[in-house]
Length: 451
Ligand SMILES: [Zn+2]
Image (cartoon, rainbow, N blue to C red):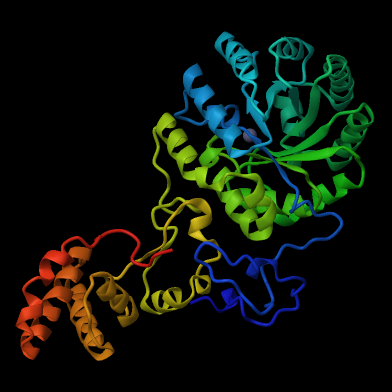
């Protein structure tokens, strides 16, 4: 058990009770105002309640090891993401290949609500190609770390600033949105980085971007860099976090707290190496931190459908521990958890499965089960037992589950046999003759606890 998860514990962070006030979808409404230790910090820097998503499955995601999207699949994914409510959809550079260029044109013509961006090197040739595809904006990128300056493009900072301003000027002259981002920002010289961003901000970019291209940054480093950047530029700030060390969601969240406005995400986090901030994982976090904004803006019920679509397209399974859609994301097993969940789901759930079109499941066919779970199952099977009898049959289930793993059918069979024994004892023969036929229709796998 995790004592720190106790939402009823006194806390100095009791700035509001918003997390406890949404009484809907299975989580009972809390009538008294309680402290909320997981509430977001809403200071003047924070954009937690007004963040925007730049969905990059069709750019960063195309860099995933097993990704190959044909035009039809790209269009299907783009339409689904648009319906879901993302603000931007980012596409592979038209300079990457002829088909990539044609796909930019095709998706730009769909008339989606989301703005279409393409991600290109900060180079005039690429920019010229991109502005002709019909996209709404260009995401310009150039490496600024000493490693990239030396081993990748071989240009120094003077050259980088000069060419950035030329390309930005060109894109703006075409009336398109423009973002300028460094690559590997966290291993770039801070003074270089800030002067570069100041220069492009003065040149009128819509956003500057910082990118943790190698996944090295920690939340605290992210907070410090974004807060510093916020104080030197007036434009929006986009962020891009790789997940090499498991910090991609936390870093994105901290960036928003520090004043970033946009977060790059991809479905299931697919991207180069082990990818970037996942759409579903970030939205799990944001549903907790900014429930009204997040639930009002995004069609959260579509997360599973979109993840399944992309998983299928790139030939992977949804990870078992995926936030929201992992197969056990809302499964409760330990007896003590199950008892509390049956009384009030908020005791062990920070997310309400119903918000995402998912269902809760209390796992009762296990040696960790408790009699409250079995009582619930007995009721679901349409049987009647006293609490003492339920405790007795629970002991029998635990006895078998100590010897081998048991299935739901095993537990049900023990319950039924026990119940029939009770009936024999009390000689209620008339009632027993029709009972099995009625019981046979009871669901055996889903939603032991209804929503
Ligand atoms: Zn990336």
